[in-house]
Length: 391
Image (cartoon, rainbow, N blue to C red; front, side, top):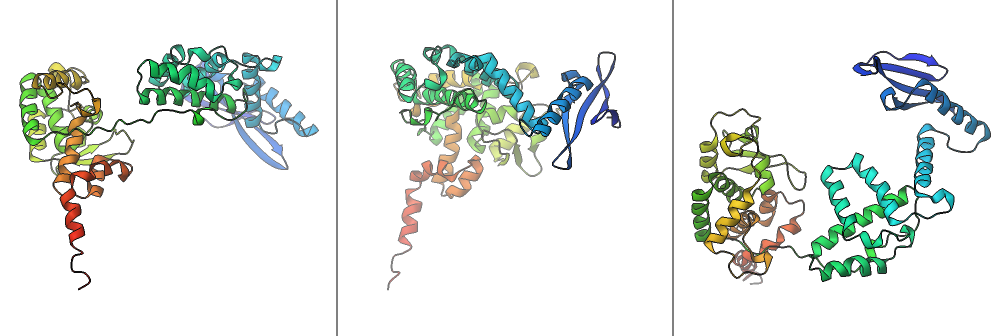
């Protein structure tokens, strides 16, 4: 970035070192004005994004007028927010006495998501708008009630056999839509989502493998897919999720200290996992001097990342008959069962729940307390230490 150059009263800019706008270097524009006797500096933005000397002059002119009469936004930040609000009202029809529908509010919300959220979040929101939220499309957004949500969204989802978790996700999208519309001044009133009667979500899996089942599973996986077998070993003996396995690079593997650095986690908190003899042997067999930046689990012939542990795993489990006759999905063996088995075995071996919680990467130990029933002897032993205390 270059030095600041004065372009006019209260207007200055500096040029980017390499980025161009047309035939010239891009410029970053700022304004300076006095407010309550002090100098205020505010950035207007890049030339390539629409900022310019004439725009700065127009902004300063409006601010000075507001300062003189004592009305309207007194800073550029507030003035920009006010302009955005008016543009949204114009787009939604609010300024012409109209009240925006859910469809119009959703359209504005999507524009916000496209610049602030991941593509997957935008795709999910559009899918919900097209399916379960479509009965609300023509309703005035501010008039949608809790009863409307229960009657037009929740009830059809329950009738369609959707899980409580799916209903919860749709309600979260509508809740975010309502909050965004309120923050932009398009609607007023309390968000109706918190009062919606939603079925409780119970996705807790109780199934874990016995040692004999684990031996059979690993042997069968080794015959079907060595990469799925190796991921299963890592999850079973280190507690990693499938996504965490897939994200590992060789830079995360510390053979000298027997550590695995788990960077990408569900809770967005990095942690360390530890190598057992089984995990070390598996990793040593996979390591052939690859660059540190390479992923540990790559596709066939080393091409690209591997992202399909579930297919081979599901076929193997089906062949072993582990899920035969099991209708409750919480009791079915899936890849995540390996992580659940890791924690269950540790508790059965007498490890404290706090230790297990840290190894699992749980943000709250309450998530680990589900395994407490697997250590009845440890609890009994703790209570029996009080025997004879009053003698």
